[in-house]
Image (cartoon, rainbow, N blue to C red):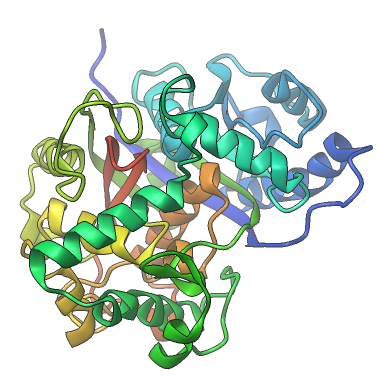
Amino acid sequence: MPALRKVAIVGAAAKPPGRWAPIEHDGDALFELDVLGPLVIQALAEAGLDRSAVDTAAFVTPSPSTRQLGFSTYMAARLGLRCKGSVSEVSALGVSGGLAFDQALADIALGRADAALALGISYQTNAPLPLIMDNSVRAVGDVDFQSPFGLTPISWYAFDAARYMHETGVTREQIAQVAVKSRSHAITNELAQFRKPLTLEEVLAQRMIVSPLGLFEVPSVADGAICLVLTSEDAARASGKPYVTITGRGYYHEGYHQIGGRPHDMTAFPAATLAARAALDDAGLSLGDINLAELYAPCTITEVLVSEAIGFCERGKGALDVVTGATSVGGRIPINTSGGCLSRGHPPSLTALYGMLELRQQLLGRCGERQVKDARLAMHCCELGNYNAALIHVLEGPQ
């Protein structure tokens, strides 16, 4: 087998997360093409490529409201893609976007493709609420023994927060600062769903969703559409266009389904610890080399816990680091400079791809007021369940 090729991100386009799905279900598939198609053309144009160059298309499985089955092959046909690498459709809950990116990455690294797309569109806001809740409950745990009790993802994050507060003495007010910080980053992000300034008092004044998490401490429903273009680094260099490379990758699944069926420490997130270690080893780096990170964190508490699990913050100090500004732009380790799930927006299956796009823009120095100074190395993390699995990539900017 030939040596693995180094892979670069050479183009990207996305629609800001928000509420823009069509209300009527008839014609959803055509409308999805109308949204995703121009993004594919735009991303390829930035890369200096056209559709004939695409060898692999790794789609994220769309939301349940999408009527078209066989979505990946349907969209590939409608987009005029003829692929020698693969056409696939990835469905793995929150880690879906990361694994679609992984598929595109692998096909190029192995020489199966010279250009690959990681892409998807997800309608969340036009899905009936009973359908959304039914799918959430069925996905959270064992459908026969846990789902009947009505546990939702927000519920388990609330469990995490309550336990963490009990163990560390950290207050809800301190954890809630994550929402304020996220909004301060999102204000200058044109791809963010929420850009209005937000105060801690406003966060704490919102109605409770699942105690101790209020409305602004959990993610809003959002639609999303995004396309990333990947090639080999050699091809990217030859093009003369700016690019970033993927230098490390790590994955770990700890053997639990979502909340799990055995007693364990819900606030430790060991999958993130081990995946980060693997990614850094793969890249030949240490954690101290990383300049910024995009972490999949649907709730305030999630960012706190995963930042501790990876090692960006000491155990029990993640929320305090937010309060002191250590994880803000200009701080020791900026986290979720896009605004994260809470403010940039959270179309769950696509969130990982939006995070990758933010890191690419940061490493290319394109983020304006929220630009991280001298950003050269970045970490991206996405997850499944209550961080039962984590997928981490390390990205490197231009030399």
